[in-house]
Image 1 (tube, rainbow, N blue to C red):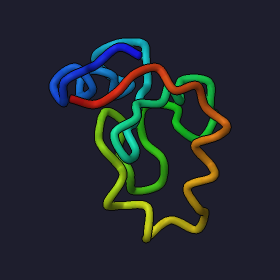
Image 2: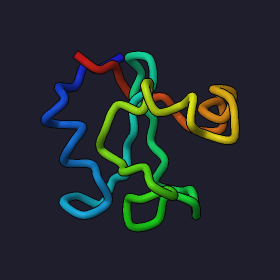
Image 3: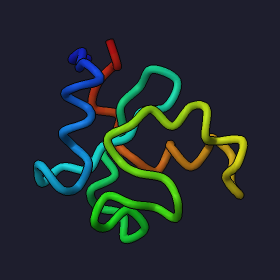
Length: 75
């Protein structure tokens, strides 16, 4: 799996590049196809970031990441 830096992840925020990515527990997921991540925002969460610390505030578990393709690892 390809390794990406935090800076590379940050560019996939739904604004700077067409891809919309988020990271969770060191894995980067492509959420571009999700209607819930359009324009790079999902409720108060922004794409292009590591969401590991934000998951406890979500109304769902980490199982949600199983819906998305893992495309890399966060350096």
